Image 1 (cartoon, one colour):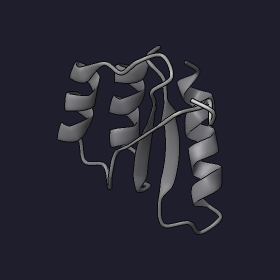
Image 2 (cartoon, one colour):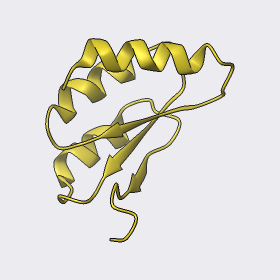
Image 3 (cartoon, one colour):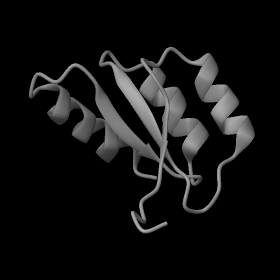
Length: 79
């Protein structure tokens, strides 16, 4: 997970004037990314990508962090 690139994209999306920035969260590097997003100055909604399963511990951790909301979605819209 390239956290610097993700944070750059978050800032660019937020600069468009949106109220919330949704960020896709995969299993790889999820904890570090969530911790970084939680300290961000923008309102973030982590979107957990469920195609390869979800990690209950990571979801519980995210629920304890100061996010506006949490979402679960699939990348494969036929799933």
